[in-house]
Image 1: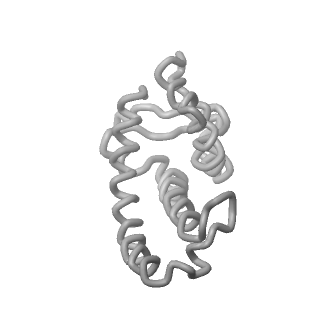
Image 2: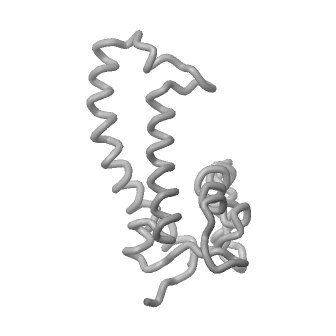
Length: 140
């Protein structure tokens, strides 16, 4: 599957997961205004606070759980694409974790990994290469 359909699926997923996470974040923003010196809002890791780390973990969990259990996220379901392993029959948890966390981090560096999807003959980004996966059309 090509760049633009994958981008559309990601945007759908980000709206879904982001909406769910916003239900948690909005009340916490009010708490932050009332108690700005709380340990929850202190930078603890590379300039990130517990609030930021929890946001990253929740968003990553959505992509990991959906991809591992279904081979696709809601956005991919709607656009009829799925993640498949290149050299085996089923996705492993390790492949999904590497793809969704480590691979997407690497792809996000200057967005080069995502741009590769548009120019690579196999339509694979760095996150697909790291995890030995690809995204294909699901014609079911």
